[in-house]
Length: 496
Ligand code: SAM
Image: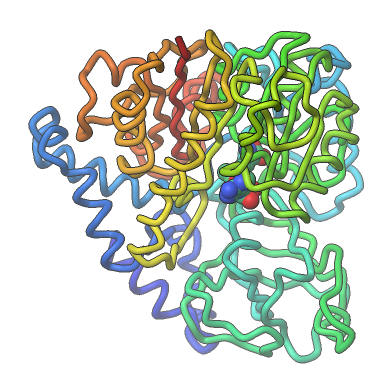
């Protein structure tokens, strides 16, 4: 497998491509590369996944196998697309029916796509989730015309998106609308924007039809918006939901939907979402409160705060108040500032019923991701920031209130070790069971006991990863819904 992978990467230049086309069905299925980290980060993660406690539980060989699975699954997209349905305004069945109609229409208008029906499956445990299988890896032959996209755009394409103009790095010299092209991801960030070809390391994502000419994409007036290449034969195929049923559905990873339910907001409560943009979880919380009460959403980046308001408007959630603010400074230092009705930050101590700290993190659990170029220093920089935010959260939480801490990363330092630190630092906090609990328990290797780890929820796609398969039996898919997710961590506390 490793040898084939190297062969594939080496051979992806124009002269050898023709020979490779006949081999593509084998190659597409078996040689999707593992995620690439800098060696220092890979070693750090390897140490996390082969820590003493884990090895004594699993044995060295199994711990190594799990780590290898982690590297493989992180570069592949999850096998289901998760849509959160606006059940505060429509019934789940109604939304399911509208989606089915949309997909059917999309297939009729798309003369290129093969007409395989896409089932829409209600999640068996979450009342506001619809699941759609991602088909792939599929057998797709490489064409001679190549468009290269940035890694972030490439990840979106693997999850069903079309190629948007700002994501395009390289396109053939005379490329025009209507041309058929193969799309590749520049996994190492080496391709220069505006290039006419690229010989560096790239991963094939599928084929599409150009909607724009090359000259429109790289126009001198600056970056253009809109779809540049419409994907018609993607390696991983999933219906595109860009701008579709925007008041009825929200594209969200399954563990993120679980966070809203674990927080358990009730109508009339006062909730704080400390790191809220673009508002995926904020809008879910507001919907679970049936739009009654207040959800204060803070984020320190102004442009991102606008996105929260935009999403709130689209989903018709008017109980959300979004502010641009550094949450570390969200506690008022004015002793006369009391009560719980202040509308703008800073807020008095103990003024929120529930607080979500969906912390800024190293994001290593995100999928698909073929390369992460962070230094070890960057990966380790999040723990102190998360602790500062956590201190504020504890101050702002009412006695008897609930605090949920979450990240989309896989390290112990940002997850279990943070929980161990929090329990030691804040004697008023108690770890609480989570409902629903669809993921695994916390990972061994921190100071937490087995009982404490059992109360945590860690989504660990590496544990059930058996390689990329293209099985679409609904039974298999539903089994995968809770396991083939992004890597994610949730802890729930109450305050005495
Ligand atoms: N909860 C969001 C959602 O579900 O859509 C995702 C949040 S993302 C994991 C973390 C966010 O924290 C980023 O948008 C970042 O701008 C914000 N952030 C980082 N440091 C912050 C701070 N000191 N105060 C407020 N927001 C911060």
